Image (tube, rainbow, N blue to C red; front, side):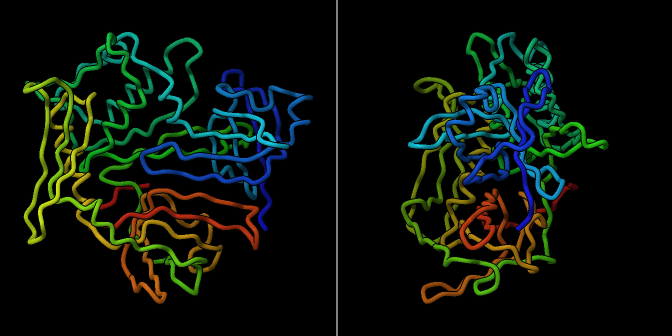
Length: 364
């Protein structure tokens, strides 16, 4: 089994609190367009002697395996759970869920007309980290895209009197079908003295189509995954409902006719004012609602067909599932993964999947 250790650090001072935290039952992983998460448990006596080891809201936590940083984030929750102390953390973008635009238009960086959402994401992070005690030390990729947000008629604005959440603003910028992707990463600097915290931006998508790795029943898939045929989630018509009241309420509709009984779904997005963003969200929601019989999750073991660490969020991978109920073979996109290094029987990983389309992938 690969050697790993858990490290904790003060978010502002950079002081190392522990370089070998004895965290057990560890689960951690990355997420596409989200922060990913970590959970684990400590023995209570470790906290009684040094309660700042995992101080929620100001402690960074890292997973190092074979000398490489695999995951990093902020501890958000630490509480007694029976005879143990449960720890929960999330990566860098989770911080923005606890920050608001108190000055408007991200400190005067907006409003935005026909702007690249990558630029707006960088502005949001720059604003958050420009305020005293708010610098998390996160760098955002210089990636550019041809996507646009805000129009002459409806510039993209952030109004301070609405107390907008910075994390929600980033979520809106990456939620459409033709929008950039992001994920949170961490790596040691050149001297292996400090973690480099990064938001990776990808355009038109993160990841790549991977013909060099695959997942299959009887090879590296450990359990028979479900392949649900969920008609109650299917819809050819998606209505994205935005800001406003009554007849002034903004909305966008994505609809197709495909020979099936008409089914409709409403996506309630009360904070979104731009009809362009509403249209992107409606199109993205409609795409997955018009797909039946897909593999949403697989649990895998470390295997030469797809060694742990060989994939990343955003990658297209070939998946084959064969069992008494299902015969599935197709390309799936990895939208998240969770690693369990101390699972019974050896390390395991669970991959979250969505149907892969014929994307043109950006660089890593």
